[in-house]
Image 1: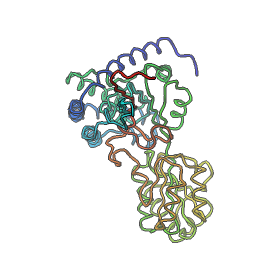
Image 2: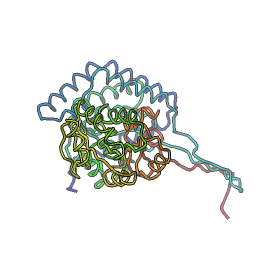
Image 3: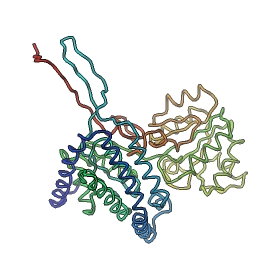
Image 4: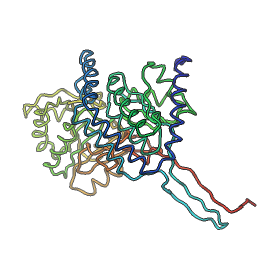
Length: 427
């Protein structure tokens, strides 16, 4: 990694130092106080809707001028209804149980020592993410509820939106007597500032990258701060030989078209050869009619030709691609084993769905698929903190240590052991 300028190092150190002070103050707040703060913060976002939409319009115009893809514009867009949903997610966080202080386990030893493992805040969390301004609020809300300060580094595409969102939240905190440095925006400074954040070990306790594969890989490889790795979503829907084909069609369409730009949208459809002739003609027509560009293997291409559906022949690269838009790769497999092997070869460990009425096939799928979330007869779009009842999520982890899947409040805590004695000494 290139050398980091002394100016960037000093600036990030100062920002993280102020966040550390705020984190120590937050760690002492009661649940009721944190919940009141969050509800007021949500109200402030609602009140500032026009201001936020205006700032977001600046970002969108820059994106259009720069040739931003429609799928990325969708991720970037904040409408009044989306802002209302973001504010409501903050209220949902306020209503959730507070993990801080939860006793994970404990006991009294034979010598009378009382020990317990208790959840405590991480401290200072850094978020590095791309053009998703909703993440700015989700991350701040979850951090506050779990007693953490957060340093936000959003992508330049959402710069105007993020500035206004953070300003509104900081003003709300200050008005309530809460240290506004609980929420900080690392604004400007280019790649130097990001590198300084990634190497602020001892000042930043945890980094969470959220975005494309290149961003996540860069943070994981170059950070000296501990990282929870969120991953890309090359998600599959597999239609088994024993599938209810009506269910399979609804699940496939929802998984791909409900919101194609997000990481839990399906990118690949696999269909067992025993049902391919009966399922794929309608499925491909429906997908194509919804605007989905299809990348099909040889057998799926033959079916598409007979059905009069446009397609392109799929390559290995197509099956490995997270499209973030209305595109999908389609393949026909002869066995459940072949479907599992395909997922092992191309899946990203995010979400994998099977549609089947065969419980043995479902059990094999859930046992053998190595992913953060495994769906049986349900859309991949359900892999989401809100849908799981967690309130907003700070990301979806595809790693296996500490946190996996949608990350919410418990995943933003660590633990400490508290040992109480009465003059005990070790013999």
